[in-house]
Length: 139
Image (cartoon, rainbow, N blue to C red; front, side, top):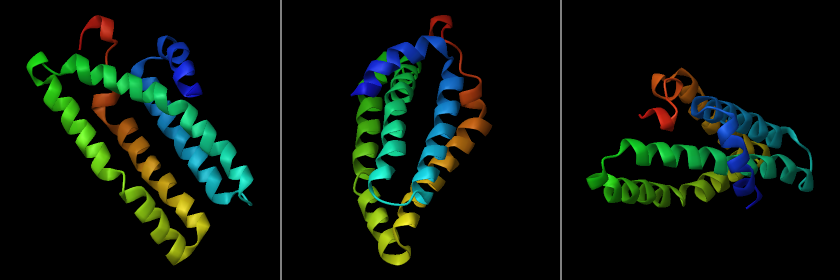
């Protein structure tokens, strides 16, 4: 919820590509830190920080999706996005439990770090994110 309060402050200060790419790499760093921290309670700090940055990126990507999707396709685009997100929800706990069972707790945190790093690499290398124009200039 605090991340939602930070988002309106961050979004006008950074372009969408900078926000998406920087937050992706910051998320990668924070998830990587969780894999090397000892103890249970200290893990909360990087995880909370990772969740603070999430609303800014989500709002930015949502705004772009709405801006580039024709009006007649808005419902379908939102439904598809929601369905994919909901379909992927059970995979996180399943993968986390599998990683803990097979390789221990540190790998359960290293797994998401690798996934977020892959997404950050795609966002950084991908022309689509780097060439995003401000919404007020039209997309």
